[in-house]
Image 1 (cartoon, rainbow, N blue to C red):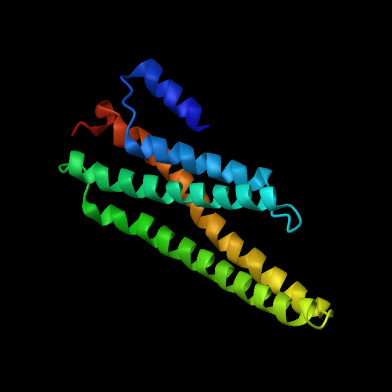
Image 2 (tube, rainbow, N blue to C red):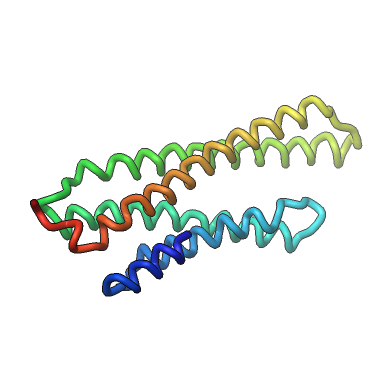
Length: 168
């Protein structure tokens, strides 16, 4: 979808590759990488590439923030800086989800060391509860990432097309 947006811009207008274009492509690639390399605890390469995708997905937030900061700075007569609260709110929500995921991961690692490796026993109900918390935290993160990506694409024509930014 992003490639189509870029191709349309190249075809109809002069296209200028900016930093946030590169970041949105890296972030989108990160989302694809996360889905391609599932988090398999028995395969270290799957784990590495999954986490690389997570790292790349952070670029989505950076791209959307840059876009929203650029719009009022390049078109002060049309846009105000009040628009930056939306991407910042998405950042906060998503990174709370990421922090919760990391906390659940830490608790799971601690549980695995104390009970599974030492006592060779585990509580299936507790592990299921941690898995549910993990999925909820990932969901919070991905809702923010998805909204940031979709919002970047919705605002794309207004941020980069001079014809749409002419005062009426």
